[in-house]
Image 1: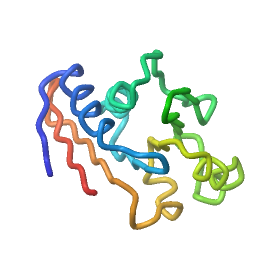
Image 2: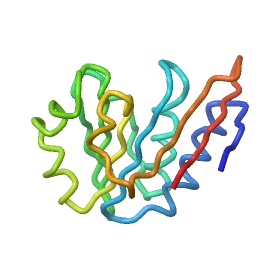
Image 3: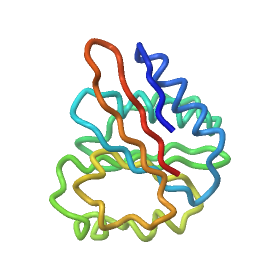
Image 4: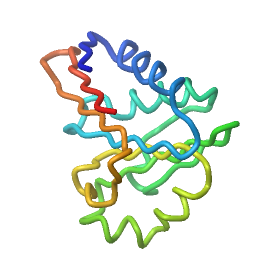
Length: 136
């Protein structure tokens, strides 16, 4: 399924729609260049999970945790080089904690994902327009 959004708030709303459909143990792999809206989409996922905390990019911390009835674990792989480094920081432990794992810069760690991973590809079409392809 491919969606086109024309603003950051529309991108956030599309994330919220997906967030409402997620269950404990879901993994969402986000792909896209810098500034394409991965964090805005994740903000929406959090809202869809009932999390009202401010969601920000975990670039310098690698992972941010947001508590809720279904917790959200928000990873940013920008500073990592490969999937092995993701496992070194406890990826397996996060998968077993019963939350939703969302990974920005998934292209750097694609070997860590299972076939059940939901893939979201964001593409800048110019200005504020984004294409969001969701592959369940």
